[in-house]
Length: 166
Image (cartoon, rainbow, N blue to C red):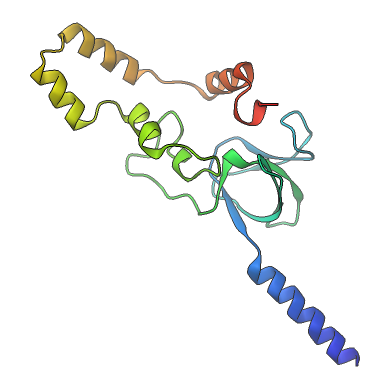
């Protein structure tokens, strides 16, 4: 009887571990929170690529467990259901190249265009229609602008966007 109960518990634990949903951190500065709030206490810093086990899907916030057994909450927009891959060129764009895998649904084409500038078709159209050189230079200046992590965080906070939304 004891062996049967032990075997059943062992099989249940194995099935639970095998079927557990995984998530991976895809954003720099991700922290494990004590509650579903950006203002909650930080339990741990989570590096990009950290594997997490999904415990509970709370919508915009996910309860997860780290590899070392810590449980807490992460904002869904900072994790993906696939491990991040290094991008050609380093993925140093405004969104760090990881937004396309994020748990938050985005229009891939729109976010890619906004990060990478004019498509070849758009550039050809501009050339064909004689877009003034001053406008091209201004666009190049805008596209060359670097936005710091602090500026992005301030923008998100002030706009109540993403994990700062209420």
